Amino acid sequence: QVQLVQSGSELKNPGASVKISCKASGNTLTTYSINWVRQAPGQGLEWLGRINTRNENPTYAQGFRGRRIVFSLDTSVTTAYLQITSLKAEDTAVYFCARVVTPFSGMDVWGQGTTVIVSS
Amino acid sequence: DIQMTQSPSTLSASVGDRVTITCRASQAISDWLAWYQQKPGKAPKLLIQKASSLESGVPSRFSGSGSGTDFTLSIGGLQPEDSASYYCQQYDSYPWTFGQGTKVEIK
Image 1 (cartoon, rainbow over the protein chains, first blue to last red):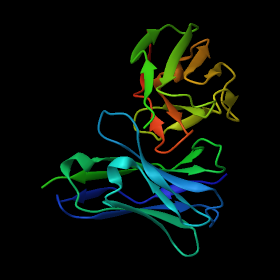
Image 2: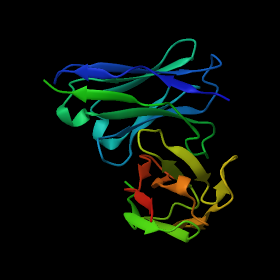
Image 3: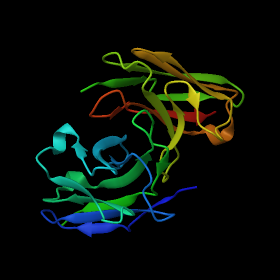
Image 4: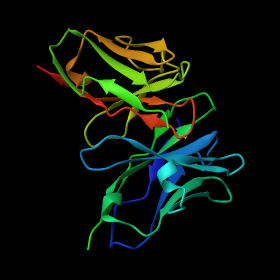
């Protein structure tokens, strides 16, 4: 059973950047896409976007199309990354990666989450 | 963007009760709907996709129905371990969107 393992918690100052990793066990992200979802403290789930693991084409949620967030993959397609620049206090959240295996599927495997705290 | 509206926001029920959560989409999404369960401090878990297709390993007391704009998640015979938050999510079109969640508590 594939697992997604994310990098550890981060504490960042406002205006800084953070890069979160999501590594697939079994060495390869043999899937359709990796999606990124965040959850602010005490709040619901927010979809940030996804990256197609076959052609590396990203799709960003509306609020992030100014490219404050960037999705990427490593060349061997074992790890996905989420980079957020110009961090704000409201970016404080748990960030999850999640797998989708076909264009007609829900997110069936999730990483354990990465806590990002933005505070001066 | 497609808005997903869940109700109720919170429900309290007894062990053995049948509970139903509803999810309404602001426009038709066919049956491109998933349901997730999330326990505190944990990642969401996919329960149902394509509105009614139960994921492997999910207890059969969970069921989903609906198409178009109106969907339901039912738990037939609530168990203590079902205490969690539940979210619907549409994957008909980008951006994918979630309902605001329903917190299920055990009396």
